[in-house]
Length: 149
Image (cartoon, rainbow, N blue to C red; front, side):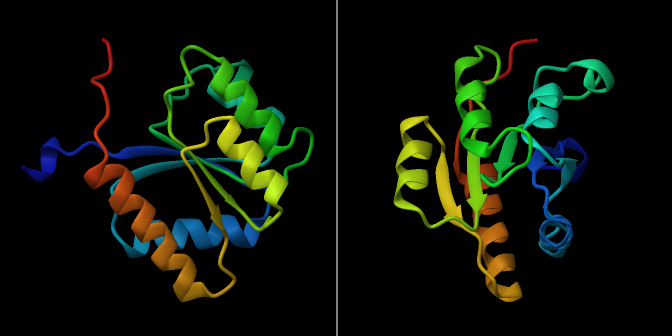
């Protein structure tokens, strides 16, 4: 496949912790995953982005959502539930990337059809490995239906 035919992966990162945002950006750059990263910092803003409201009306629909659970205004479980209720959004893979190890968070995330649940590693190298592995998995291995034009 020629490089010019490769389209960047559109990733929406829903994260309010600035160091985690920076780490994610660094990890994506480190593994040279061709991507367009969009960042929103709370659950209300996430849904505005995804439903293209106000300042987000010209934003693309992401190919992947990285969702923290511990968010201001609207938590990640509420955001996940809304995403999976929306006809135009429910097929987007949602990776829960959070510090929570609470069994009820894990269970609820899967009940709401999260694609996977990953506990954020504290160690920098481990975090890089996590980002590389989900990038490899979601964009090299997984097949998606063709988007309608």
